[in-house]
Each structure stands twice: as structure tokens, then as C-alpha cells.
Length: 348
View 1 (spheres, rainbow, N blue to C red):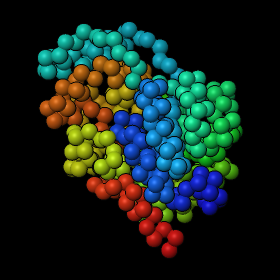
View 2 (view 1 turned 90 degrees about the vertical axis):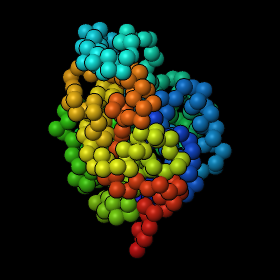
View 3 (view 1 turned 180 degrees about the horizontal axis):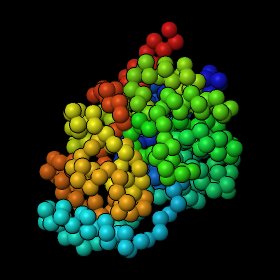
């Protein structure tokens, strides 16, 4: 199954670079694809103009690539919840001398829609992946008509079966150790979440489509272990964050390169949806999970000025420092070299 799956994607190595919104652009994806893996471009935070530019860059490499989109439902405005959220943040605004008055802001992340589908029809990307479930049946049919392979992310066996029933070509099994946003979509109960290897083993037995392991895989040994448990390949994210091709911020790089990276937690403070990141001041003082945080992705709006001011001072107190539970694979080497290292002596 692994050989057939890799052949269907057109890649030589069983490595998919995790799409990581906010810390990468097409340069990282291109480097991974050129090394023989499958580079991924996160698209949820890109304008139509930027997405077109990035797709042009990816297309011209002649290598397979993956474009990733969110499929979250648009949030409903909740003035009471927003007011409570700003009340919690008020002491920080005062500390930094920032005007607490709300300022209009566009949503920081948009779900996959007709405009994005129109662009994909022009470029016909080899692989399209979705986070937080799948788009509507009509939109999914449009993507399938392009000949693109479709990947979905599941955090439970139930979600994997749901994706399989809707015809995805492969499923990313996202373990609880993974950095960034949880792909959970059938439930909001974090008690349903399990570790990567437990999830992969169960999911590989439950579905007939290839399973891709994601979460805490940072070296060749992890990739091999995932394959022994039935995974066709591995999706790797955190390990790439210190590569020169990543756009990881200075404060984020510093945190990853420090002892702080050993302490991560799942939090909803930075976007309104659970995601794993390095524990920082905001998480310690408000609690990693706080019911006052507005619905995804609205929580980030009120934090934006605090994040900008703190980062200008070299602090990541209000930044989303996404990181998995195994940052040991983070290396300051080119992404191509890291991709090859992840499969070193794999066949042997």
C-alpha cells in the first residue's frame, strides 16, 4: 500500500511536510518537494492574490505539492463573549499602553469556498488537503473533478470512518502530540483525543485507505515506527520550524531553541480553537483553555496589538508559539537535508 500510495502522489519519500499557517510560504513546500517528499502550502490565511502567486511558484517547480484549506463554519458574532474576552485582556492593554477600543479587522482565517475552488481549477494541484472536516459535497466534487488527490485529517477513528465514507484518498491521523490546530471536527470533547501511535494502529485497521501518521514524528526512527504500525507515510511539521526556508518569527525561533519548548499545552486562547503550542505568559495566567475566548478564528483579533507590541520587544507572551511535544527534531538545516534525514536508512 505504501508503494502504491507514494506512486499515486508522485513522490519518492514517505514524508509529507505539514502545512503550517503563519510560519511558512511556498519556499518551504518547494524545498521539501524537490527533495522527494510532498511539500504543503497552508492557504487558509492567504488572500486570493497571494494564493495565486504561491500557486504559480509551486507549479513552476514541476514537482508534486499539496495545498491545504480549513473547512470551519463561519463564526457567529457574540458581543457578550467578545466583551468578556476584552475584559480579560484589559490589564495587558493597560500594561502596554494600548488603546483597548475594538478596531475592525478581517477574519484571520477563511474556510474553503467557491473563490478558492475557482483558483484550483486553473492550477489543478496534485494534492488538496482539508482540516476540520471536509467542505460541502458540491465543493468537494469540484476538487475531485480536477484529478487532485484529496487528503482529510482525523483525530479519532470515528472521524477517519467519516472521511473514508466521503471518498478521501488518504487520511492524516493527527495524534494529540501534534503541534498547531487540532483537526477535531465531529466533537469538541478533547477527551476523545489520543496519542499518534495508538491512533495510527487503530485507524489502519479500521479503514481501507492509506493512513498518514502525524504528531511527534521528528526523525527517521519515528517515521519507521509509524510505518511498522501501518502508516503509509508520516506528516512532519515542528521539525521544519527552524529551517531557513520557514518564516518562523524571531521570538518563535528563540522559544523553539530554548528549554521552553519542552513545555507545551493544548490551548484555545490564540484563535478560539484547540491547538498545541509552547506554554507562555498568556497561557499561564489565563489558563490554556478558557471558555471566554471567542469562537474560531475571532479570538486572534483582540490579541493582535498585544502580540505585535510584545514581539517588538522580543517577547512571545501573546504569540501562538505552535510546537509539538517532540521538538527534538528541530534543526537549523535546509529543509531538503532534513527531509532526506527523516528517511535515512529507512529501507534497511
